[in-house]
View (tube, rainbow, N blue to C red):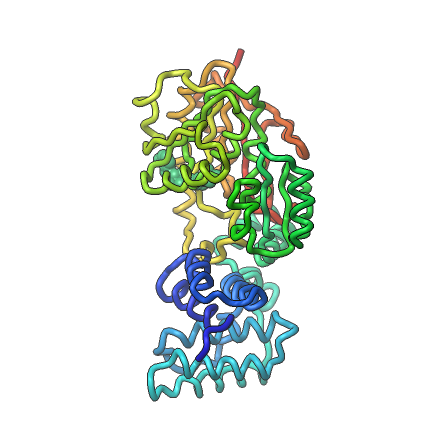
Length: 438
Ligand SMILES: C[S@@+](CC[C@H](N)C(=O)[O-])C[C@H]1O[C@@H](n2cnc3c(N)ncnc32)[C@H](O)[C@@H]1O
């Protein structure tokens, strides 16, 4: 069978569902090798993300239709991907979905396997029966409808009430925008003009400065990206560096830096200063250096492999004017972009990560100069990793206070900002800004 959007999507889904690979890495790898036309790449991306975002709902549709154990690894992903197309892709006729599933089953099945008959039979039974959903008063209703594990659906309802929780869950199942940030070192107006000319149709973000969503992918293959005029960064992520007030000659510590999205943004702001970028994983710091090089700020960035929980043994007290802790987190704000995260995370992960985050915060705070600025951020929306950690930190450090901040487009009057994913259709993010008293 010739490689096409559906074979790439199925290959990726098998890797993610049967082998635990990450969707973005597996899909990019497969697309790079396949060199499909842009429209086919878009379809492959849609099939992978759409199937993973709706996996529990699609699994539920198989209820009562699968009578025996599905032995070959491709069958379940193929059934889910086919039902996804039948239910969510209006432009693909049902007949084409079944024909393509038949071809894929023959190509991915073992020689002489009759798996294709099984796939065809199940899909036809599904078409006859139609979709099913638990009753609205069933405790599993929201979990199945929005394809979130039950604990997470319950968690969202407990924290934001049923209406907002539904909005958040629905927004997690929409497509992520193609978001870029224009470097502070180039003329924004000129780049926007050039992006329009190149048919990227940039639309300005309502949230972050110099952020735009593009109407199509492929920016990383262009000179805009290669020459460091733009970088790929979600608008909520790029808001974090905006929380600082820079003069331009500060010593900055980025304590959890890889792959360096925020390091380069901070470096763009300190033409006379320097950013020290730490990460616990030496290997990942290569990405920080590469990003700094591409974005033309390598001369302002130093990297160091270090566990930030031990930073006090390496740097002097009060050594930095600004400190960013973009902490390792559960990623609960990224479920749109990394849909499979939701199926592997457990409530205990939130508790464990919250403790690591607090340990980093407690240690690194000692390196802040009196009157300096410390920004703590996560790409999680959980209360434990964010507001609760802020309160615990303040209790343990009476010399620190929250500092209200204002970015180009939003305000945090209490010094804390939580961006929920349905507000701007961005990643979910939390940002808190501290300074010392007096
Ligand atoms: C959320 S990511 C940072 C993203 C980065 N700031 C950016 O904008 O590209 C968190 C990073 O913290 C690193 N990390 C985890 N535990 C750490 C620790 N104890 N000390 C320093 N870095 C740590 C991880 O390896 C990961 O690269």
